[in-house]
Image (tube, rainbow over the protein chains, first blue to last red):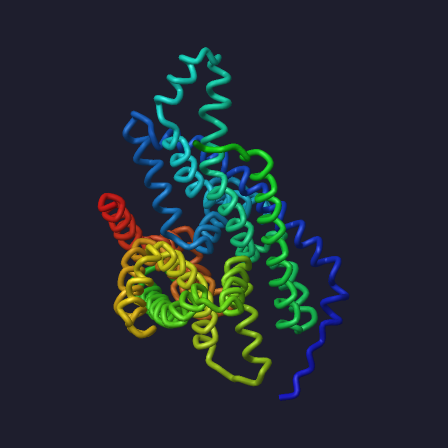
Length: 222
Length: 216
Protein backbone atom coordinates (compact mmCIF):
# COMPACT_ATOMS: atom_id res chain seq x y z
CA UNK A 1 0.00 0.00 0.00
CA UNK A 2 0.87 3.64 -0.18
CA UNK A 3 2.34 3.61 -3.65
CA UNK A 4 3.27 7.11 -4.74
CA UNK A 5 2.64 7.84 -8.39
CA UNK A 6 5.65 9.52 -9.90
CA UNK A 7 5.35 10.86 -13.42
CA UNK A 8 8.55 12.92 -13.21
CA UNK A 9 10.60 10.14 -14.83
CA UNK A 10 8.09 10.10 -17.67
CA UNK A 11 8.39 13.85 -18.16
CA UNK A 12 12.16 13.56 -18.12
CA UNK A 13 11.94 10.96 -20.88
CA UNK A 14 9.38 12.90 -22.91
CA UNK A 15 11.69 13.75 -25.84
CA UNK A 16 12.61 10.06 -26.20
CA UNK A 17 8.94 9.13 -26.17
CA UNK A 18 8.13 11.69 -28.86
CA UNK A 19 10.90 10.24 -31.02
CA UNK A 20 9.31 6.88 -30.35
CA UNK A 21 6.00 8.24 -31.68
CA UNK A 22 7.76 9.26 -34.88
CA UNK A 23 9.32 5.81 -35.04
CA UNK A 24 5.87 4.24 -34.76
CA UNK A 25 4.45 6.49 -37.47
CA UNK A 26 7.39 5.77 -39.75
CA UNK A 27 7.09 2.05 -39.17
CA UNK A 28 3.36 2.14 -39.88
CA UNK A 29 3.81 4.29 -42.98
CA UNK A 30 6.53 2.06 -44.41
CA UNK A 31 4.54 -1.07 -43.52
CA UNK A 32 1.38 0.31 -45.10
CA UNK A 33 3.23 1.28 -48.29
CA UNK A 34 4.50 -2.27 -48.62
CA UNK A 35 1.02 -3.55 -47.77
CA UNK A 36 -0.52 -1.45 -50.57
CA UNK A 37 2.03 -2.79 -53.04
CA UNK A 38 1.26 -6.36 -51.98
CA UNK A 39 -2.43 -5.49 -52.08
CA UNK A 40 -2.39 -4.27 -55.69
CA UNK A 41 -0.20 -7.13 -56.94
CA UNK A 42 -2.23 -9.59 -54.87
CA UNK A 43 -5.53 -8.50 -56.42
CA UNK A 44 -4.13 -9.39 -59.83
CA UNK A 45 -2.73 -12.77 -58.78
CA UNK A 46 -5.86 -13.47 -56.70
CA UNK A 47 -7.97 -13.17 -59.89
CA UNK A 48 -5.38 -14.81 -62.14
CA UNK A 49 -6.37 -17.52 -64.58
CA UNK A 50 -3.22 -19.41 -63.58
CA UNK A 51 -4.53 -21.79 -60.94
CA UNK A 52 -1.42 -22.18 -58.78
CA UNK A 53 -0.87 -18.42 -58.62
CA UNK A 54 -4.46 -17.90 -57.54
CA UNK A 55 -4.25 -20.69 -54.93
CA UNK A 56 -0.95 -19.38 -53.61
CA UNK A 57 -2.46 -15.93 -53.10
CA UNK A 58 -5.49 -17.36 -51.31
CA UNK A 59 -3.23 -19.50 -49.10
CA UNK A 60 -1.15 -16.42 -48.24
CA UNK A 61 -4.26 -14.43 -47.30
CA UNK A 62 -5.69 -17.21 -45.14
CA UNK A 63 -2.43 -18.01 -43.35
CA UNK A 64 -1.78 -14.36 -42.49
CA UNK A 65 -5.33 -13.70 -41.34
CA UNK A 66 -5.55 -16.82 -39.16
CA UNK A 67 -2.27 -16.61 -37.24
CA UNK A 68 -1.17 -14.02 -34.65
CA UNK A 69 1.10 -11.18 -35.76
CA UNK A 70 3.47 -12.02 -32.90
CA UNK A 71 4.08 -15.50 -34.33
CA UNK A 72 4.46 -14.06 -37.85
CA UNK A 73 7.11 -11.58 -36.78
CA UNK A 74 9.04 -14.20 -34.77
CA UNK A 75 8.94 -16.55 -37.74
CA UNK A 76 10.24 -13.85 -40.10
CA UNK A 77 12.85 -12.74 -37.59
CA UNK A 78 14.43 -16.19 -37.77
CA UNK A 79 13.44 -17.21 -41.30
CA UNK A 80 14.86 -14.17 -43.12
CA UNK A 81 18.47 -14.76 -41.93
CA UNK A 82 18.09 -18.41 -42.93
CA UNK A 83 17.33 -17.14 -46.43
CA UNK A 84 20.54 -15.14 -46.27
CA UNK A 85 18.84 -11.81 -45.48
CA UNK A 86 20.49 -10.25 -42.45
CA UNK A 87 18.36 -7.21 -41.79
CA UNK A 88 18.11 -4.93 -38.81
CA UNK A 89 15.06 -5.42 -36.56
CA UNK A 90 13.25 -2.32 -37.81
CA UNK A 91 13.43 -3.49 -41.44
CA UNK A 92 12.25 -6.95 -40.36
CA UNK A 93 9.33 -5.27 -38.59
CA UNK A 94 8.43 -3.29 -41.73
CA UNK A 95 8.39 -6.50 -43.78
CA UNK A 96 6.24 -8.24 -41.17
CA UNK A 97 3.78 -5.33 -41.03
CA UNK A 98 3.73 -5.13 -44.83
CA UNK A 99 2.96 -8.83 -45.25
CA UNK A 100 0.30 -8.72 -42.54
CA UNK A 101 -1.36 -5.55 -43.85
CA UNK A 102 -0.99 -6.79 -47.43
CA UNK A 103 -3.19 -9.83 -46.84
CA UNK A 104 -6.00 -7.58 -45.60
CA UNK A 105 -5.35 -4.98 -48.32
CA UNK A 106 -5.81 -7.57 -51.10
CA UNK A 107 -9.33 -8.32 -49.91
CA UNK A 108 -10.19 -4.64 -49.39
CA UNK A 109 -8.94 -3.56 -52.82
CA UNK A 110 -10.62 -6.55 -54.47
CA UNK A 111 -13.92 -5.37 -53.01
CA UNK A 112 -13.34 -1.92 -54.47
CA UNK A 113 -12.53 -3.21 -57.94
CA UNK A 114 -15.60 -5.42 -57.92
CA UNK A 115 -17.78 -2.47 -56.92
CA UNK A 116 -17.22 -0.89 -60.36
CA UNK A 117 -19.77 -2.22 -62.81
CA UNK A 118 -18.63 -3.01 -66.35
CA UNK A 119 -21.56 -1.05 -67.72
CA UNK A 120 -20.18 2.13 -66.20
CA UNK A 121 -16.97 1.81 -68.21
CA UNK A 122 -18.97 1.18 -71.38
CA UNK A 123 -21.19 4.16 -70.62
CA UNK A 124 -18.13 6.36 -70.12
CA UNK A 125 -16.65 5.32 -73.46
CA UNK A 126 -20.01 5.82 -75.17
CA UNK A 127 -20.10 9.38 -73.81
CA UNK A 128 -16.87 10.03 -75.67
CA UNK A 129 -14.45 10.04 -72.73
CA UNK A 130 -10.91 9.00 -73.49
CA UNK A 131 -9.69 5.72 -71.99
CA UNK A 132 -7.45 7.49 -69.50
CA UNK A 133 -10.36 9.65 -68.41
CA UNK A 134 -12.60 6.63 -68.00
CA UNK A 135 -9.95 5.01 -65.82
CA UNK A 136 -9.39 8.12 -63.73
CA UNK A 137 -12.98 9.28 -63.22
CA UNK A 138 -15.06 6.15 -63.60
CA UNK A 139 -12.85 3.36 -62.30
CA UNK A 140 -10.16 4.75 -60.01
CA UNK A 141 -11.91 7.52 -58.09
CA UNK A 142 -15.13 5.67 -57.22
CA UNK A 143 -13.13 2.54 -56.37
CA UNK A 144 -10.86 4.57 -54.11
CA UNK A 145 -13.85 6.15 -52.48
CA UNK A 146 -15.43 2.74 -51.89
CA UNK A 147 -12.36 1.32 -50.17
CA UNK A 148 -11.17 4.49 -48.45
CA UNK A 149 -12.87 3.87 -45.07
CA UNK A 150 -11.63 0.24 -44.84
CA UNK A 151 -8.15 1.13 -46.04
CA UNK A 152 -7.67 4.01 -43.60
CA UNK A 153 -9.12 1.88 -40.81
CA UNK A 154 -6.57 -0.75 -41.76
CA UNK A 155 -3.81 1.84 -41.54
CA UNK A 156 -4.79 2.79 -38.01
CA UNK A 157 -5.00 -0.89 -37.07
CA UNK A 158 -1.51 -1.45 -38.49
CA UNK A 159 -0.21 1.51 -36.47
CA UNK A 160 -1.55 -0.09 -33.29
CA UNK A 161 -0.27 -3.53 -34.29
CA UNK A 162 3.21 -2.07 -34.76
CA UNK A 163 3.54 -1.96 -30.95
CA UNK A 164 4.11 -5.73 -31.13
CA UNK A 165 7.31 -5.07 -33.09
CA UNK A 166 8.92 -4.32 -29.73
CA UNK A 167 9.31 -8.09 -29.39
CA UNK A 168 12.08 -8.02 -32.01
CA UNK A 169 13.41 -4.70 -30.63
CA UNK A 170 12.40 -2.59 -33.63
CA UNK A 171 12.59 1.15 -33.05
CA UNK A 172 9.11 2.38 -32.15
CA UNK A 173 7.13 3.81 -29.23
CA UNK A 174 6.57 0.59 -27.27
CA UNK A 175 10.22 -0.47 -27.34
CA UNK A 176 11.26 3.03 -26.24
CA UNK A 177 8.74 2.74 -23.41
CA UNK A 178 10.09 -0.65 -22.37
CA UNK A 179 13.61 0.73 -22.23
CA UNK A 180 12.49 3.63 -20.03
CA UNK A 181 10.53 1.23 -17.85
CA UNK A 182 13.50 -1.04 -17.25
CA UNK A 183 15.63 2.00 -16.33
CA UNK A 184 13.13 3.57 -13.95
CA UNK A 185 10.84 0.73 -12.76
CA UNK A 186 7.90 3.10 -13.14
CA UNK A 187 5.93 0.58 -15.23
CA UNK A 188 2.43 1.93 -14.75
CA UNK A 189 3.33 5.60 -15.23
CA UNK A 190 5.28 4.88 -18.41
CA UNK A 191 2.71 2.59 -20.01
CA UNK A 192 -0.22 4.78 -19.03
CA UNK A 193 1.40 7.79 -20.69
CA UNK A 194 2.33 5.80 -23.77
CA UNK A 195 -1.23 4.47 -24.07
CA UNK A 196 -2.47 8.08 -24.14
CA UNK A 197 0.12 8.83 -26.83
CA UNK A 198 -1.18 5.99 -28.99
CA UNK A 199 -4.70 7.28 -28.45
CA UNK A 200 -3.59 10.74 -29.61
CA UNK A 201 -1.92 9.21 -32.66
CA UNK A 202 -5.00 7.26 -33.71
CA UNK A 203 -7.28 10.25 -33.15
CA UNK A 204 -4.98 12.46 -35.20
CA UNK A 205 -4.92 9.93 -38.02
CA UNK A 206 -8.70 9.53 -37.92
CA UNK A 207 -9.23 13.30 -38.06
CA UNK A 208 -6.76 13.70 -40.91
CA UNK A 209 -8.33 10.86 -42.92
CA UNK A 210 -11.81 12.31 -42.41
CA UNK A 211 -10.62 15.72 -43.61
CA UNK A 212 -9.02 14.22 -46.72
CA UNK A 213 -12.19 12.28 -47.43
CA UNK A 214 -14.32 15.44 -47.22
CA UNK A 215 -11.93 17.20 -49.57
CA UNK A 216 -11.60 14.57 -52.28
CA UNK A 217 -14.69 12.42 -52.19
CA UNK A 218 -17.23 15.16 -51.74
CA UNK A 219 -19.61 14.46 -54.60
CA UNK A 220 -23.03 12.80 -54.74
CA UNK A 221 -23.20 9.08 -55.47
CA UNK A 222 -26.53 9.03 -57.22
CA UNK B 1 23.26 -31.14 -24.48
CA UNK B 2 21.08 -30.54 -27.50
CA UNK B 3 17.34 -30.85 -27.25
CA UNK B 4 15.58 -31.80 -30.47
CA UNK B 5 12.00 -30.93 -31.27
CA UNK B 6 10.31 -34.21 -30.41
CA UNK B 7 7.19 -35.56 -28.80
CA UNK B 8 7.89 -34.00 -25.38
CA UNK B 9 8.33 -30.55 -26.88
CA UNK B 10 5.15 -30.94 -28.91
CA UNK B 11 3.23 -31.86 -25.74
CA UNK B 12 4.64 -28.72 -24.10
CA UNK B 13 3.16 -26.68 -26.97
CA UNK B 14 -0.19 -28.44 -26.50
CA UNK B 15 -0.20 -27.48 -22.82
CA UNK B 16 0.37 -23.91 -23.99
CA UNK B 17 -2.52 -24.38 -26.42
CA UNK B 18 -4.74 -25.38 -23.51
CA UNK B 19 -4.07 -22.00 -21.88
CA UNK B 20 -4.66 -20.16 -25.14
CA UNK B 21 -8.06 -21.84 -25.46
CA UNK B 22 -8.95 -21.24 -21.80
CA UNK B 23 -7.89 -17.60 -21.95
CA UNK B 24 -9.92 -17.11 -25.14
CA UNK B 25 -13.00 -18.73 -23.60
CA UNK B 26 -12.74 -16.64 -20.42
CA UNK B 27 -12.26 -13.43 -22.40
CA UNK B 28 -15.13 -14.27 -24.75
CA UNK B 29 -17.51 -15.12 -21.92
CA UNK B 30 -16.51 -12.19 -19.74
CA UNK B 31 -16.30 -9.86 -22.72
CA UNK B 32 -19.69 -11.09 -23.90
CA UNK B 33 -21.38 -10.30 -20.59
CA UNK B 34 -19.76 -6.87 -20.18
CA UNK B 35 -20.08 -6.25 -23.92
CA UNK B 36 -23.84 -6.78 -23.76
CA UNK B 37 -24.07 -4.08 -21.09
CA UNK B 38 -21.83 -1.84 -23.21
CA UNK B 39 -24.06 -2.35 -26.26
CA UNK B 40 -27.21 -1.60 -24.23
CA UNK B 41 -25.69 1.50 -22.63
CA UNK B 42 -24.40 2.63 -26.04
CA UNK B 43 -27.93 2.48 -27.47
CA UNK B 44 -29.66 3.79 -24.34
CA UNK B 45 -31.82 6.93 -24.31
CA UNK B 46 -29.59 8.67 -21.78
CA UNK B 47 -27.09 10.91 -23.57
CA UNK B 48 -24.53 10.70 -20.77
CA UNK B 49 -24.60 6.92 -20.88
CA UNK B 50 -24.28 6.86 -24.65
CA UNK B 51 -21.38 9.32 -24.67
CA UNK B 52 -19.44 7.51 -21.97
CA UNK B 53 -19.75 4.28 -23.96
CA UNK B 54 -18.58 6.01 -27.15
CA UNK B 55 -15.49 7.05 -25.21
CA UNK B 56 -15.03 3.58 -23.68
CA UNK B 57 -15.13 1.92 -27.10
CA UNK B 58 -12.90 4.59 -28.69
CA UNK B 59 -10.22 4.13 -26.04
CA UNK B 60 -10.04 0.36 -26.50
CA UNK B 61 -10.20 0.56 -30.28
CA UNK B 62 -7.72 3.43 -30.46
CA UNK B 63 -4.89 1.95 -28.38
CA UNK B 64 -2.77 -1.18 -28.88
CA UNK B 65 -3.96 -4.32 -27.11
CA UNK B 66 -0.42 -4.76 -25.81
CA UNK B 67 -0.58 -1.39 -24.01
CA UNK B 68 -3.97 -2.25 -22.52
CA UNK B 69 -2.42 -5.44 -21.25
CA UNK B 70 0.52 -3.59 -19.68
CA UNK B 71 -1.65 -0.91 -18.05
CA UNK B 72 -4.07 -3.42 -16.52
CA UNK B 73 -1.27 -5.80 -15.53
CA UNK B 74 0.82 -3.17 -13.74
CA UNK B 75 -2.16 -1.06 -12.68
CA UNK B 76 -3.78 -3.88 -10.70
CA UNK B 77 -0.51 -4.49 -8.90
CA UNK B 78 -0.30 -0.82 -7.95
CA UNK B 79 -3.65 -0.61 -6.22
CA UNK B 80 -2.48 -3.47 -4.03
CA UNK B 81 -4.43 -6.27 -5.66
CA UNK B 82 -2.11 -9.25 -5.86
CA UNK B 83 -3.46 -11.49 -8.57
CA UNK B 84 -1.94 -14.41 -10.43
CA UNK B 85 -0.65 -13.32 -13.84
CA UNK B 86 -3.34 -15.21 -15.74
CA UNK B 87 -6.16 -13.43 -13.87
CA UNK B 88 -4.69 -10.00 -14.65
CA UNK B 89 -4.28 -11.00 -18.27
CA UNK B 90 -7.83 -12.40 -18.40
CA UNK B 91 -9.22 -9.12 -17.00
CA UNK B 92 -7.38 -7.11 -19.68
CA UNK B 93 -8.67 -9.33 -22.48
CA UNK B 94 -12.20 -9.25 -21.05
CA UNK B 95 -12.24 -5.44 -21.03
CA UNK B 96 -10.86 -5.31 -24.57
CA UNK B 97 -13.38 -7.88 -25.84
CA UNK B 98 -16.25 -6.04 -24.15
CA UNK B 99 -15.48 -2.89 -26.14
CA UNK B 100 -15.23 -4.70 -29.48
CA UNK B 101 -18.23 -6.99 -28.93
CA UNK B 102 -20.18 -4.05 -27.50
CA UNK B 103 -19.54 -2.10 -30.70
CA UNK B 104 -20.48 -5.04 -32.95
CA UNK B 105 -23.72 -5.59 -31.06
CA UNK B 106 -24.44 -1.86 -30.97
CA UNK B 107 -24.37 -1.91 -34.76
CA UNK B 108 -26.75 -4.87 -34.84
CA UNK B 109 -29.21 -3.23 -32.43
CA UNK B 110 -29.19 -0.04 -34.48
CA UNK B 111 -29.74 -2.06 -37.67
CA UNK B 112 -33.15 -3.22 -36.40
CA UNK B 113 -36.08 -1.24 -37.75
CA UNK B 114 -37.32 1.33 -35.26
CA UNK B 115 -40.78 -0.19 -35.55
CA UNK B 116 -39.65 -3.21 -33.53
CA UNK B 117 -39.18 -1.13 -30.38
CA UNK B 118 -42.30 0.90 -31.11
CA UNK B 119 -44.41 -2.21 -31.56
CA UNK B 120 -43.04 -3.78 -28.39
CA UNK B 121 -43.81 -0.58 -26.48
CA UNK B 122 -47.29 -0.40 -27.98
CA UNK B 123 -47.89 -3.97 -26.85
CA UNK B 124 -47.11 -2.82 -23.34
CA UNK B 125 -44.09 -5.08 -22.90
CA UNK B 126 -41.89 -4.05 -20.00
CA UNK B 127 -38.36 -2.82 -20.81
CA UNK B 128 -36.64 -6.07 -19.84
CA UNK B 129 -39.00 -8.17 -21.90
CA UNK B 130 -38.57 -5.84 -24.89
CA UNK B 131 -34.86 -6.49 -24.79
CA UNK B 132 -34.98 -10.18 -24.01
CA UNK B 133 -37.82 -11.21 -26.32
CA UNK B 134 -37.78 -8.70 -29.16
CA UNK B 135 -34.56 -6.75 -29.62
CA UNK B 136 -31.70 -9.04 -28.54
CA UNK B 137 -32.75 -12.27 -30.28
CA UNK B 138 -32.92 -10.43 -33.62
CA UNK B 139 -29.84 -8.28 -33.05
CA UNK B 140 -27.61 -11.15 -31.96
CA UNK B 141 -28.70 -13.08 -35.04
CA UNK B 142 -27.64 -10.23 -37.33
CA UNK B 143 -24.37 -9.93 -35.39
CA UNK B 144 -23.50 -13.64 -35.70
CA UNK B 145 -20.97 -13.43 -38.58
CA UNK B 146 -19.12 -10.47 -37.04
CA UNK B 147 -19.14 -12.09 -33.59
CA UNK B 148 -17.61 -15.32 -34.87
CA UNK B 149 -15.13 -13.26 -36.88
CA UNK B 150 -14.15 -11.38 -33.74
CA UNK B 151 -13.42 -14.68 -31.96
CA UNK B 152 -10.55 -15.15 -34.41
CA UNK B 153 -9.16 -11.73 -33.45
CA UNK B 154 -9.53 -12.65 -29.80
CA UNK B 155 -7.67 -15.95 -30.09
CA UNK B 156 -4.85 -14.26 -32.00
CA UNK B 157 -4.81 -11.46 -29.43
CA UNK B 158 -4.22 -13.82 -26.52
CA UNK B 159 -0.74 -14.47 -27.96
CA UNK B 160 0.26 -11.08 -26.52
CA UNK B 161 0.03 -12.58 -23.03
CA UNK B 162 3.37 -14.14 -23.99
CA UNK B 163 5.01 -10.70 -23.75
CA UNK B 164 4.11 -10.38 -20.06
CA UNK B 165 5.47 -13.89 -19.53
CA UNK B 166 2.27 -15.90 -19.28
CA UNK B 167 2.90 -19.35 -20.74
CA UNK B 168 0.31 -19.87 -23.45
CA UNK B 169 0.93 -21.20 -26.95
CA UNK B 170 3.13 -18.37 -28.27
CA UNK B 171 5.27 -18.22 -25.10
CA UNK B 172 5.56 -22.02 -25.07
CA UNK B 173 6.82 -21.68 -28.62
CA UNK B 174 9.46 -19.16 -27.55
CA UNK B 175 10.64 -21.49 -24.78
CA UNK B 176 10.84 -24.57 -26.99
CA UNK B 177 12.50 -22.51 -29.71
CA UNK B 178 15.30 -21.36 -27.41
CA UNK B 179 15.78 -24.93 -26.11
CA UNK B 180 15.96 -26.61 -29.48
CA UNK B 181 17.59 -23.84 -31.55
CA UNK B 182 15.06 -24.66 -34.26
CA UNK B 183 13.01 -21.43 -34.30
CA UNK B 184 11.75 -21.76 -37.87
CA UNK B 185 10.38 -25.26 -37.26
CA UNK B 186 8.93 -24.38 -33.84
CA UNK B 187 7.24 -21.14 -34.91
CA UNK B 188 6.02 -22.93 -38.03
CA UNK B 189 4.34 -25.55 -35.85
CA UNK B 190 2.98 -22.88 -33.46
CA UNK B 191 1.58 -20.97 -36.44
CA UNK B 192 0.00 -24.15 -37.78
CA UNK B 193 -1.70 -24.81 -34.43
CA UNK B 194 -3.12 -21.26 -34.34
CA UNK B 195 -4.25 -21.73 -37.92
CA UNK B 196 -6.02 -24.98 -37.08
CA UNK B 197 -7.83 -23.13 -34.31
CA UNK B 198 -8.75 -19.97 -36.24
CA UNK B 199 -9.38 -21.08 -39.81
CA UNK B 200 -12.54 -23.11 -39.12
CA UNK B 201 -13.97 -20.11 -37.28
CA UNK B 202 -13.09 -17.82 -40.22
CA UNK B 203 -14.76 -20.20 -42.67
CA UNK B 204 -17.83 -20.46 -40.43
CA UNK B 205 -18.03 -16.67 -40.18
CA UNK B 206 -17.78 -16.30 -43.97
CA UNK B 207 -20.49 -18.93 -44.44
CA UNK B 208 -22.82 -17.17 -42.02
CA UNK B 209 -22.22 -13.92 -43.84
CA UNK B 210 -23.01 -15.48 -47.21
CA UNK B 211 -26.16 -16.99 -45.75
CA UNK B 212 -27.36 -13.64 -44.41
CA UNK B 213 -26.45 -11.89 -47.65
CA UNK B 214 -28.51 -14.41 -49.61
CA UNK B 215 -31.46 -14.07 -47.25
CA UNK B 216 -31.53 -10.30 -47.69
